[in-house]
Amino acid sequence: MTRALIAEDEPILAATLAKTLQGLWPELEIVATAPNGLVAVELGLALRPDILFLDIRMPGQTGLEAAEELAERWEGPQAFPHIVFVTAFDDYAVEAFERAAVDYVLKPVSSGRLGKTVERLRGLVDAQRMPAVDVAGAESLGQLLGQLQALLPAAVATERLSVVRAAVGNVVRMIPVADVVYFQAVDKYVNVVTAESEALIRVPLKDLLPQLDPAQFRQVSRNMVVNMVCVTSAGRDDLGKVTLNLRGRTDKPRVSPVYAHLFRQM
Amino acid sequence: MSSSLSSYIPVPRSRLRRLVDDLPLAIVVGLLLGLVISLILGRRAGFFENLLVSVMIGIVAYTLVTGVRLLFWDHANWGWRQWAPFVLVVIGAAPVAHFVGLHLSGWMLGVPLPPLSSYPSDERFRLIAFTLIGTTLAVILGMYRDSLRRTRDEHAAARLRAEVVERQALQAQLRLMQAQIEPHMLFNTLANLQGLIALDPDRASEMLDQLIQYLRATLSVSRSETTTLEQEFAAMQAYLGLMGVRMGERLAYRLELPPDLRTARLPTMLLQPLVENAIVHGLEPKVEGGEVLVRASAVGDSIEIEVRDTGLGIRPGQVSSRRGGGVGVSTTRERLEVLYGARAAITLLPAEPQGTLARLTLPLEITA
Picture (cartoon, rainbow over the protein chains, first blue to last red):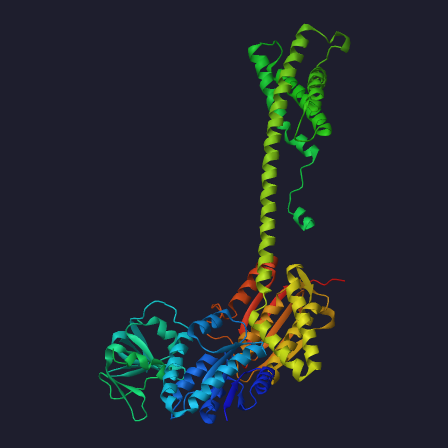
């Protein structure tokens, strides 16, 4: 039995999508409906559906962000769910979906258009059932995540930061950006980590990112930006996730599958 | 539009005013001619008496000619129909002006004057011819000045008219900017409607009513400049009703309009962007949702309208950003500035314990 999760903040739309899907695909089981992006991730991890219908504009976290977080936290042998984005008219999103060849449906959902999506999903699910293509399933996850990355909002170029000013006690420390090994988001703060020290600053990682040299500082997961000059090697841990060895550091941060391609051999 | 436009155009000066305005010109010409007569022709009588006579003749001639011109031919484009009688008036005015001017100054100086029967003499005919030359000179100067003045007035009027038109265009543009229906909102609402038709036809019909009312209020603003608080609150009721269906339990709302403010007039599209901001930036992105309160009250001779939400609140850097309250609030502020100057204001404050409070203050205008 194929299982699906719907993430949609407007209750009537969630009920309508569930009902239309049931008409088109009676064997599909809708395991749950998530009212926002945060719940969607938790339910996705707990219920392990085969298919995820994600609304783009949701409170808490957008559908794109939810997909990214889910991909990062997805573990175990089960293939990553097929994702179908659902959105009302939105020039930007639709254009991005077309470019990235991601599956999407527009609200109001026409049952004809949804029928085609269901047909394609059925084909994908059936193919996955055959053990021979299991590896291909993992491959397509990487592909989808690469596409997702293209959908996430691009950083806007602003002035480059050369020194980070961090308050430690009642002293403001001046940390040259070149000395930073990585920036890590911790709640509302960012931890600025060098070989010798750590300091918290009150700037969200999203705001910091555009101020860094994109060639040197790369995002490796949702909450971490690494200085590529400080990466000595990349390996795989017991769960098969990519981890980094950093100059001057003993901790080995994990790389999200979305960004694993940065550390593949040339 | 034409009535409001004409109030900007200056009222033309009255004829009497124009007559008096150019009188100094006649006096100057009279003085000059008096000087010429005394110095060049070497008249025997006293120098000052000569000047007085000359000025008096000038004033009378000017008043006659200009008075007739302003009374009968006061317009810009002259053909021979106007020129021919005017030349006759100028010629006829010369002896009359000479005679009247001479008697006036004689009366002023207390000098006995010759009776009318002995009035014609060679010398006096020469002086009458002189008066004619002076009058002609003054008339030409006066008409030249008039045409300059007319051109200047026309320029000023044209500039004013352009300013008014520009201001009205700006108003219309700002109003339109605020009246744009976000496609995302429209399609999501239609999606809900589509769903409700299958799930609950009665509620679908109710929602359709609200959508119609909202669209009517939003789309008709480009045609009208003002509305009443009652209409504006009805449009907000419809909008919040739509959002209530869409957001379900996440949205609660309340509208409070005192009965005596129902007919208060206000520009269209001032309130709606504030309420939409409260939803789009305050409550829609908040996981738990919350409440919107829209309230109008009279404070002295102003109306105060408050839109209070318990949403995410003003985040640092949001007000100036494009996504944030930015466009709505700054456009509203610009419109208020154009319409009322310092008599209106809009403020955006953090609400307690959470959310945003938008406060709009306007001059109170009640229509019967």
